[in-house]
Structure formats: structure tokens, C-alpha cells
Length: 255
Image 1 (tube, rainbow, N blue to C red):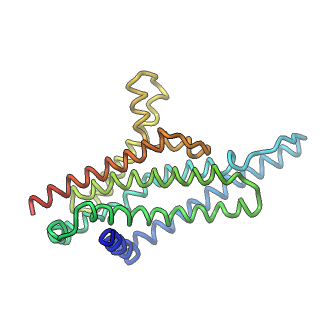
Image 2: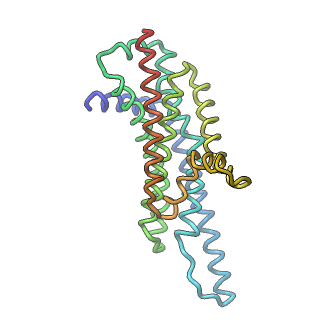
């Protein structure tokens, strides 16, 4: 684990000495703040209209603010996460240090976990910005914290899955832009697959919808912990890291 943490710290440092971390932090802060503000504004407007019309039915903060914001963040994260993973191995190949890395006494699994964990921790820092926005809801409102916690667990698992797949993509090229473009295309495919059951109810459509990463986030955003969704994300993480290990192993043999 010492080697994993050493590699992880090195990668985290490289994020913050480049514009990547600061750009993503700025974008996440702006979008998260805007989504939360817009949902809150609609909530207040609808509440006032209900009172003026004499309707006393309480409106739920979780359903009207937290669920829409988390769903929007989940979609936005799909297309920003490839920027975190694009450089993990592509930069090593561009600088010519990949040969030194794969022929070093460090085990392949330690290299992969260290690099992937750095991207996951960076993504966790981005999610903290969204949590900071939600803190105002707890100060001035009374939302249920359990659906919020499960929603962030779902966001984290979804992001970790995409980062595992994009880590594998980063091993295939030395060009970071190409790695980011392929990762973006993959995220887009995994997003649109959730539409399959909208116009078709066949078994194939059901399978395609199940493969979509977005469709497995819905239960988390509603505060429901479904074991099949949890297992799906863990399987995707394992699959992405497994492919990365096989790609790194081929580099080691070529080196």
C-alpha cells in the first residue's frame, strides 16, 4: 500500500500544478451552485403559489431540490471525468517514462490503483463542492439526510466506474486529447443507452438500458440502496481496472 499511496500523491500533485484541477473545480462550483440555486428558486416560487391558492400540502425538499440537482450533476460528471483520467498513462507515454514505469519493481496493480485512486480522490474533492451547496439547505430547511448521503454514494460509485474505464483508455494512446475524446464518446454511449427502453421493450433494449451507468443512479438519488446497482458499479470498476492491467501487462512485455 505504500507504493500505491506514493503514486497517488504524485498524481494528485500533478493535478494541482496543471490547470486541470482548477478548471474542473471552477466548473463544478459554478454548475453545482447554479443547479442548487435554480432548483431552490423554483421550490420557493411553487411554495408561495401554493400558499396563495390556499393549498397547505407540504413540498418535499429532497424531491424538489436534491434529487434534480444530483441527477444533473451525475450527467455533467460523465462528460467531465474523462479530463481527470486522460493524462494518467497518456502523459507517461508522451514523456517516454512509461518504459521506466512498467519495468520498475513496482507491481502493475500498485501502479494502476495509485493512478486510479488519485483521479477518484480528485473527483471526491469536486463532490465536496456540491455538498457545500447543500449545506445551506440544512441550515435553512429540513431535508432528510439519508437520501442525500445515498445520492452522494451513487455519484461517487458512478464516477469511480467511469474513471476506471477512462484509465484503461489512457493506456491506449500517448495523446491526452485523444484519450479525453474517446472517454467522452464512451460516457456519451453509456448515457444514451438509458434511452433504449423509451421506444422499445424487447429483451435487447432491456439489456442495453441495464448497461447504462446513468440508469443505475436513479435509485441512489431517490434514497434507495439497491444491491444490484451497487454490484453493477463495483463490477464496472473491476472491469475497467482489469482491462487496464491487461494493457499495462502488454506494455511490460513490449518494454
